[in-house]
Length: 181
Image (cartoon, rainbow, N blue to C red; front, side, top):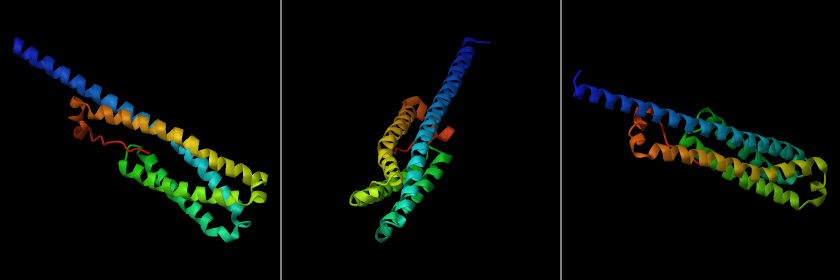
């Protein structure tokens, strides 16, 4: 074997090891997005359960505000549908956009229901309703923290994917940019 052949083999080995290392790094960062998604999904499930229970508890006493309660349940269904789509593949940009849209509708509907509930202090004083309203209101801070973890994991993934030599491999490995919540 000549020195030129040894040099070519050494360069080829370095390139192969780099490709494997870059792939493993992106897979690990994508797995971190999946782990962060589990935290978001848990917070969404808790908020969804609180919203459903609160809406059903308020259905009879707030019959004149049925549209607000229906909007809350419809927004929750939209968020749940988007969350299920995102659970299959937490890196999908279109699924994160659908969840963001659902979250905006959910935030508006929840604010409306909580504002209506604030106008009725006797109803809000009932322990079951007060507990669910507190859970629904408290979920905003929990979701903000979970979203931040998800977004940080997505940013780390996108940053690694955008680095010069690694971005050459994105099409080869079919890696896509991560969405943000």
